[in-house]
Image (tube, rainbow, N blue to C red):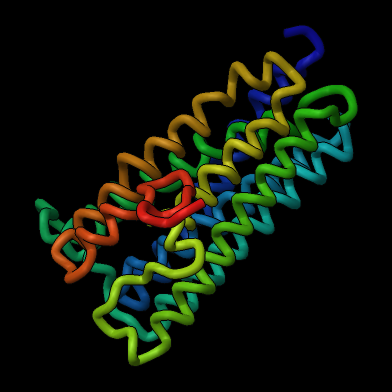
Amino acid sequence: MSGFPWSAFALNLAWAAAAALAVMLVTFAVALRTGVHRIVDVAWGIGFTAVAVVTLAASAGHGDAVRRLLATSLTALWGLRLAVHIARRGRGHGEDPRYEALLAKAPGSRNAYAFRMVYLLQGALVWLVSLPVQAAQYVPGPPAALTWAGTALWAVGIGFEAVGDAQLARFRADPANRGRIMDRGLWAWTRHPNYFGDFCVWWGLFLLACDSPAAVAVSVVSPVVMSLLLTRGSGKRLLERHMADRPGYAAYRARTSGFFPRPPRGTRS
């Protein structure tokens, strides 16, 4: 693991934590003013962008300039697209039912409970999941095959997210589809094209750090955690529990992959 600037990277971890915390503090202040905590979902992508930009500044003089710019740019493009999409989707809506259910369990102040259980937790997850983006910017030597493979995987992921989100938005905008299950386009191949896209994005960003065994060692936990969140945590599992009683959902689930894309059952190849 020689050649990796451990002391500089350790300091970067602190700067990244401060950046993630700052984003969550500002978001919490806005939520107190508006009375809606769903805005924290917008801050998720912004937090990763802030960590990537802070790392770009802190890593000056370390790592490879092309990889540093690439890691920052890919993270910012993903994070800002996601933030804008969630902001547009939530415009004009009240509190998210997930947060209503969580805050109903608050033992005291709902806002204090939200700060502990939502904002601080999401800030910590931003810091943890962003470890590959941080580590990649300290990897010495020019980008090699794994870096470009990671960039290609990232492109597949953000494509799935963007196309899937656009298809769902058009479907919901048509009054004729009210109460129906979206089973067209990418949604015919996987029940969760956006979550599969996230999966590809973060494994792709991890590959940017894989030219250094040291960077791999400190960051491999991150895509694993993200994968678990998407499939067993607040992503797929929670959404499918919410959708389970919708008319037509059982049949859709039976014919459509739960995560990795494949042709729907009953369709000839």
